[in-house]
Length: 338
Ligand SMILES: NC(=O)c1ccc[n+]([C@@H]2O[C@H](COP(=O)([O-])OP(=O)(O)OC[C@H]3O[C@@H](n4cnc5c(N)ncnc54)[C@H](OP(=O)(O)O)[C@@H]3O)[C@@H](O)[C@H]2O)c1
Image (cartoon, rainbow, N blue to C red; front, side, top):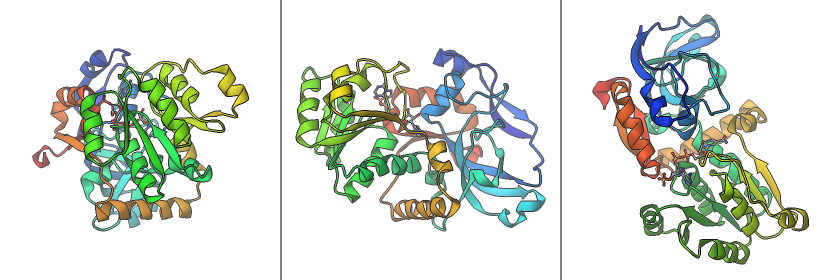
């Protein structure tokens, strides 16, 4: 048996969705020949997990099910084809139809695993499989376009933080958009030159001027709704709005038809799983090696606001939802480690 957080009912109302999460002891799978069982060290809550429990994400599973799309841990059991993985430390990203990572154990296939280098911190490794690769894949779009500047919204979040790391490496300017003064202050104190608060009266005019002045030809949009249209219209000619998240839960609106037709602008979508599938294994492992290097050096770091035991699920997720910019909430299934 294993202790897990179990989702019994999807609910668009996030508080009701949280209340349908129960801590239970459920049966632990015996691995098939091509599977391993991982003892979970830690697993974060990401916006995709929140959308999942609301039933509004791209992945919908048969209920009841354990949520959680990523984490870190150690391989403690292996099917006959994977015995060489026993004892290995791994990060993992799994969106298949089985149980997820908010649990003491998870059963996965080899393709879901990322082998970790020595000295990789296991809490950081819990948040390694999704956001760092997403930022890497997104930023490649700016590299291909030879952009001298990019725009990020929801800039207090973790994907934008990693985009800023890559931008600094490539000497690309970043226009950061946030929605509250505390996050704006934190970014300015961290040395960001361009931080705009979308609640300011002059925000739209300033964004328009700055985007054109810096020639910000790529915007990474995690918000959607009318915000996407506003971003798109503010960007200079021959630019691209890359939508990778829908934090507003609203359809994209307010795109100027004139800007779309006469300014050679483009709107595209980015999805980590599709990007990953286009890479061969050697290339993926090379990128993983380089990204892990950044974490081992301490140059990249996921902000973690709180470590919680599985029993604290409701309060822990409420505190994440109350201030996502403060960092991830990390489940520690062995509660003595919290
Ligand atoms: N397409 C892909 O493959 C892919 C991969 C990874 C992540 N994502 C998406 O990327 C987005 C960001 O993820 P993350 O891990 O960076 O998030 P995160 O670290 O948990 O932070 C979320 C950030 O978004 C802000 N935010 C939340 N709702 C907002 C809204 N309605 N308008 C403006 N800002 C809002 C929060 O600000 P406050 O503190 O003010 O709430 C916070 O700064 C999510 O939508 C996630 O699903 C997509």
